[in-house]
Every structure is written in structure tokens, then in C-alpha cells.
Amino acid sequence: MRRVVEVPSVPSLLHPWQIDPPLPTSVCIDLSNHLPQFLPSPEGWDVCKRNGRVTITGPGHIAVGMDAAQYGMLLDQQAQTLHEAFLNSVVASCRCKALLMGNIMCRGADTCCPVYVAS
Image (tube, rainbow, N blue to C red; front, side):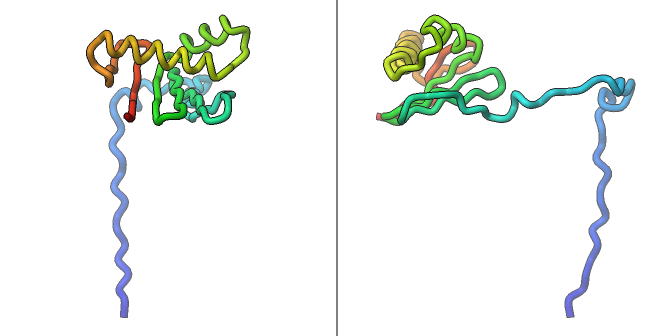
């Protein structure tokens, strides 16, 4: 015979800034930028935007990341035409910058940096 045991729920403790003072009901927090949004890309490439960052993944197991605003400005200079040559030049630029900085896995304040490079 199996005994059913109820586990009491522990109330989650809220931080003071979550309680006092309460936010007005007119305040709406938009977290939609947290969800990944796949942008148009050529065959074999993935361009994903999330949290103000764009990650470009291409053939050869390479991925680079940059600020979404920077990617948008580069794309505007291309007259909104996204070609594989454009993505190759962005990847080459990011790799060159990382190599000049001496760290292929640079992160932090850099606006364009490789996040993974496989040989």
C-alpha cells in the first residue's frame, strides 16, 4: 500500500523592492526581447536575435555575436539585402578583432566577438 504524503508549499520570499512600494497597475514589463527571434538568413546560416544581441551561426561551426543595433546598422548599409558574402565579412571582422585582442573567446564590453570557433 502506498502512502500519499503532502509536501507543504513554502511561500516564496519576495525582495523588499518587489513589495514596497508596489508598482502602479499601469506599469507593464515587456520581456518579449528575451524570446529568441530568428532573422532572415541565407541557406546554411542562422541569425538569432535575443536580449539586444545577435548571434550569427554559419557553416564550419563558427558563431559570432554582436549588438543587435550594430547588426542593424551594418544591414542598413547593405540596403537590407542579406547575402552570404555579407555574413562572411561580418564573421571575418569579428574573428580579426578577437585575434587582435589576443583572445578568441573575448566577452564583455566588446560589441562584436566570436563566441565559438571550431577547427
